[in-house]
Image (cartoon, rainbow, N blue to C red; front, side):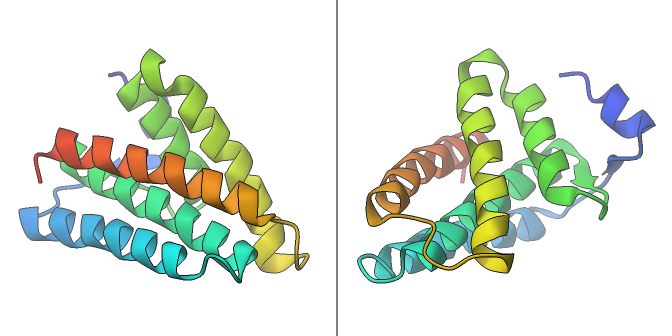
Length: 141
């Protein structure tokens, strides 16, 4: 895993997280998955946004465990770039999918109501659960 470009661009910084910080950050992901599920059916936009946050928190926990944290500028985008590098080829398509959802989540939160169908929210939640499980396994939590 070569994160030199992200470091050189100031997108990530080295960071020494405690095991407790890593666990607590990962617990946010688990909480968000449960909350997203509770919002379906009913509020697809919000369930979608919470699902996205679960992915973000699991990824942050992984970054912390790897000795890095994102810079505050474009943090969400940077986290996904980091994860694409960290997880490699088997996850490139999944991370690209998450990046598309990142953009849609922005619209759902800041721009337009009702853009996420219940079907899309359920599909996203299912993929997110698998991803969070993979991260948990890699973190040995």
